[in-house]
Image (cartoon, rainbow, N blue to C red; front, side, top):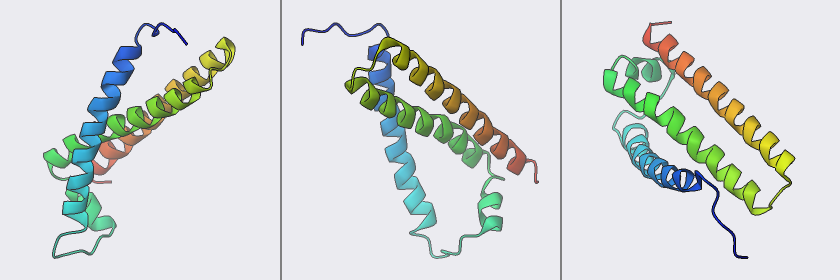
Length: 118
C-alpha cells in the first residue's frame, strides 16, 4: 500500500482539524447559552432575538460553512477509503460540493432573513 497522497489532500486534512476545533468551541458555547442558563425557555422569539447581536450573526456565519465542510469532507474521506472508480469519485465529489454550496447559501439566506426582522 505504497500510495502517494493526492494533490490538495493536505489542505483537506488541515481544514478538517481547523473546523473540528471551531465546532468544539461552538458546541461548548451552544451548551453554555442554551442549556446552562437560568432562563431555559427556548422558542422562536428567543432564537430570532439572538440574531439582533452582530456577534451571534458572525458566529452563525462561521458555524454554517465550518459544520458543512467538516461533515462533507469527513464523508468524502470515508468514501475515499473504499477506493471507488474514478468516475464515481468525480461524481460523488461534485455532488458533495454542490450540496455543500447549496446548503451554505440557504443557511446564509436564513441568517440574512432573520437579521432583517422577517
